[in-house]
Length: 516
Image (cartoon, rainbow, N blue to C red):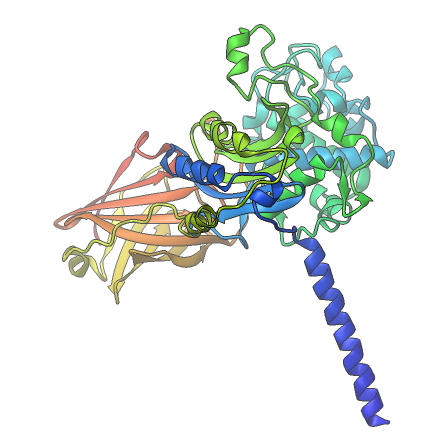
């Protein structure tokens, strides 16, 4: 009898484990080879070669054809298991939450924005404000000018700040990119559902697609920022693009409301209708705007985020593509897709070439962002154990201390806000770490609009640029950005600069420091 009970218990455990394995398996995307899905491996190789030579620093890509992953890669130290800050790709997820809420009859496209916030309206409600609809906000035609997003860094009540912004043009008639408008969509969804967008989407979108361990920034009121701040993995981005490619179907089930993909992905407004056709033809930002998505050339459309985050859907080719990166020229980045990947796609299966297949795998395996050179200096012995007091500065840095041991460089930063941060940097390789130090992020003008998600994962490396100049490279690897701290030592003095990767060398501010 005891043996029977043990056997039944073991069988129950095995059933549970098997169910979990099936769930895990169904959550991941199927894989195939490029040629089996009609794509040339050489074309992907050419894309990777061009990517590595371009002005864009690529962090990952995942390419799907006919619903199967045919190529994927991460530039070391970025990894498949890491999330990545999406910036405005977040908007496409917020719009999807609106789509679900409409389907569940919690709101409609024609609902007036003011109707959701009667207690936060300005003293005078203009005709244009009273007429502003959910649809107007979805298609970035709020009628405001300039974009009021910078107000998010000034006011604690973002809803009130948005509603107090003058509307100069009739809503629905003029395009202006408005991230605070997307925040309003998030606030509306939370108002009518009682849940943050991330929680509302979890059973409806994230769980059916097997998307887990994600997070989303919030404002001080506990509302997801909507227009930015979502972090998901590259595969999750690819799944979202593939879901739209399949018109909302996933594993034979209709996940998105019927017809929402067509409604959300067709052009609703033209960005600059008076622009010469020649300029329109060369730009992926002049093909029309949808519901928090952009139309592209080649009959494609996309979600995109600052510094080069893309979720691209190519219906004519049955292709979905996810890219994470950091770049100052997103058009140049997407041009590589059209120049190298698009011509590599064919209607029929192709014959695989063993040599080319092996070369593609070799290229993918070798993907890496630039690693600081492993240089040494006797100065390391001189400054080890020393702390330097930094003059008053906009970075709020108060002191920096150094300690060298077994080739590792341990750095301690103190700020005038009483916060202390410690980092380890390795020579000629990356050193993993975590920090609560706010990292580089996009601002609206001089206003910081981001609420950081902590702790942040980092990778640190150091190099001696010359005998007296130490450079610390700190990658925030769940974001597109990197921090460069450069220290030039002269006797008991130190000249220090702390720069972000997206404006490196442009606005360099040198801070003076001296031995404590």
